[in-house]
Length: 98
Image 1 (cartoon, rainbow, N blue to C red):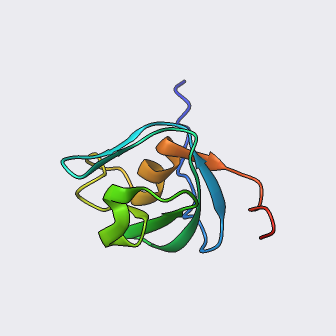
Image 2: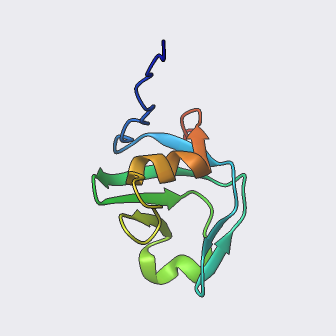
């Protein structure tokens, strides 16, 4: 008897959620962002996730220091934007007070 397990799907992050990059994020030809950087989810829907980084990355200036995960650009076939996002980040503690 074969048991079928449902495919695991990561939940869409919420605006304001804090994360840390666990993998290098390559947005060729514009920027290569190293693992270990922290940021806050600015926007998330089924087609796009914006992550504003805490530390300024000069090559992201024209995008308001945000990394973007977009459906069809940063996803594999059959993969959701949320799944692609969570492959590169993990939840982090809140930002320190200013």
